[in-house]
Length: 171
Image 1 (cartoon, rainbow, N blue to C red):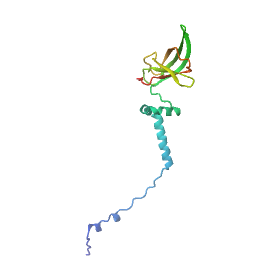
Image 2 (image 1 turned 180 degrees about the vertical axis):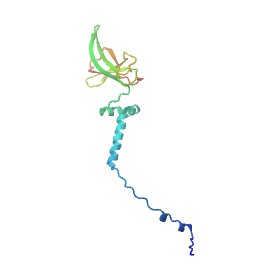
Image 3 (image 1 turned 90 degrees about the vertical axis):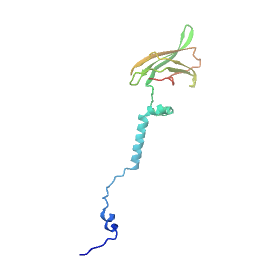
Image 4 (image 1 turned 135 degrees about the vertical axis):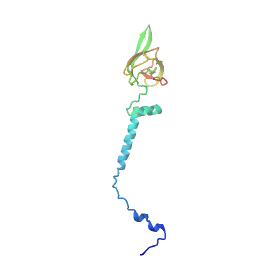
């Protein structure tokens, strides 16, 4: 009977001899352009869909969204139907501004105070004042009429802008 002597265990077990290479699985490569386009589309969707959160955290982004035609309304209130006219009452000249406020949100809200500004023909503000809305609470979709008066308006006034006061909190 013949016997063979092994000088080391490494001679007995050789990993390379016992293992066979795994069969190659064909993988499809996704074109880089497709990956880049999908990433850009996802980023655009996040920027558009999350614009309220972005503007809340970074208010300077609001003009960029407005330039793209994407309105951002954090207060969920709208001002519409504005009219401004000069009237005479008891021999005095008055500027009468009327319009409506609408709750465009899905919850009841307290409308904030309004900031009315008289601008000259070049668009520069020459006078401003604030006014409170007529109603203290608006349900979703509800409108409230408002009227603001200014005694002795500036003679060089050409336009009136109405906005909500920046420090008002809509709850």
